[in-house]
Amino acid sequence: MVPIRNGLGAARSKKRKLRDSKLTRSMKRIRADMVKINKGQERIRAGQKEVREKFEEISKDTAKLKEETNTISKQSAANQVTLDLMFQIVKARSENDAPKDAALTQILRALINGEAEPELKRAKLPEEKQEQRLIT
Image 1 (cartoon, one colour):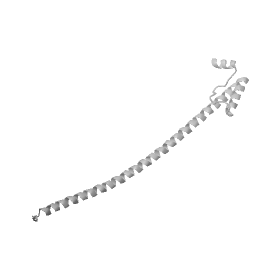
Image 2 (tube, one colour):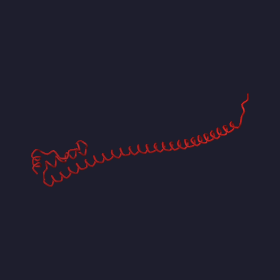
Image 3 (cartoon, rainbow, N blue to C red):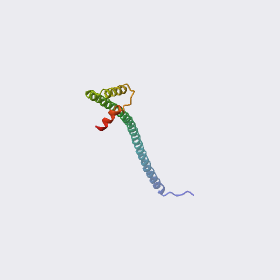
Image 4 (spheres, one colour):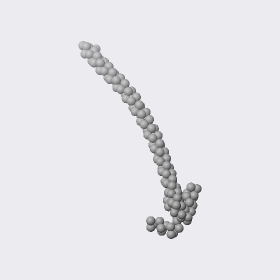
């Protein structure tokens, strides 16, 4: 026997086609949105990479500046020591203190020639002169 079609099959077919076309349009829309999202994510990744590179460059510059600052600070301290010694030499000469003058001059020469440590802020004086300095 052949089934009799009364037109319900055609209606179902139309509903199915309508549903399939809606589904297809929805899938196309979702795919288009996914493409846009992927492009946006790629831009974000590129931006993050650029920011990371700039941050690394800034970190390197910061380390370099810190190193230069420390070098300048050390040079400044060495200059201060040298100036202190020169001032003490001038003071010793004005007081006609030849032994103190000679000792300070010797330390200054050693400091300038790199033979003495820059931490020497005070000259090594004969015992009596050190005691006199401690009193004043």
